[in-house]
Length: 358
Image 1 (spheres, rainbow, N blue to C red):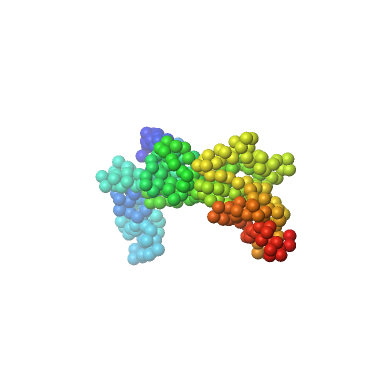
Image 2: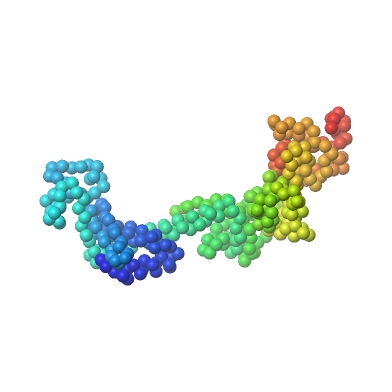
């Protein structure tokens, strides 16, 4: 079949569905093969597009068997014909060859045309789903901005990209989150899966990596590697603790991250619905690292350092013991998680009573 309109239609379908021509050709090919199989009752067909000539060729395929011979391996793939039947279709047919019989789309029956349309749409929709999936897969482990569309009892319905809608379960939202329809929020993409109905994207606001991504967005020195986040821990909605190291002696990790007048850290906190961010300087010196991680509580000394077990004892002023431990043990818990060290805390008085030398 020669049809310029057919090939123009390919381009229109590609443009309308945000696909490339090769993808649409593939979908049409599968549809034409399905129609050919239905029309001729064969197991295999071949389709050839000659775009430069605006030509479309469709062939049903048969395997020509010699008299009395049955090749079981080929029989599983091809529809076979006896040599005499093959010669009736094509006089030059030979035993052992693949005989191709040309068919025109205009010859398709109603059922064959129906199979063509059904298979074409099926393959086209699958390609579109796969394209969306691949695009969303690039967002996995990244932070994205979403718009709140609706609030339900257990989740928020949010729009991430055009026509990409997912759910933010309230168990993955912060206790301080109070969103309204139209609000723009930051979420972290934890996973992207291909489901039967299409790609499904999972998001969270409680994941610790959301804080890291916010720091990268609002602190250029972190984004470009001048400052590194080497330790981070989080009590979602309440407080995060972040250990930072500068790779440039002229850049102060705390000052750069906080920003002039605290503008950077305030923006980060705002997107976390008021969650507090504690920053501390990372150090290769174990005692200094442990002491810094317990900030804002001052540490008098760090002793009984056991590198093998990564455990240590921090001595703090009596009046600062509660601050070092934190409400419900939050400060020391976050310090342990962020530094990677198991930290015991004692006041100066208790240390003296126990004869601890430091």
